[in-house]
Length: 79
Image 1 (cartoon, helix red, strand yellow):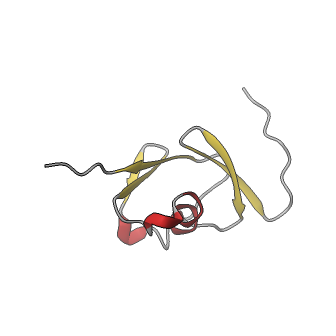
Image 2 (tube, one colour):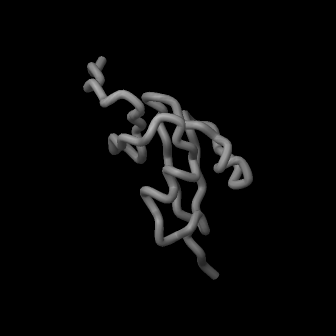
């Protein structure tokens, strides 16, 4: 397995769409979305942590833990 790099105290590392991102300890899904897609304000996005979809209404409360694997997916409109 991979050996995680040491992070400064008060930081956590999560894997987002295969990319390693450092966040403040205690960061929520809402904090992550603001960081990776600030222009979208959460609209048209879905988030899954370790394979479990997190409801949009829970983003402000859903904490991220070290080494979580997060997928941020963009809905594609069509018609």
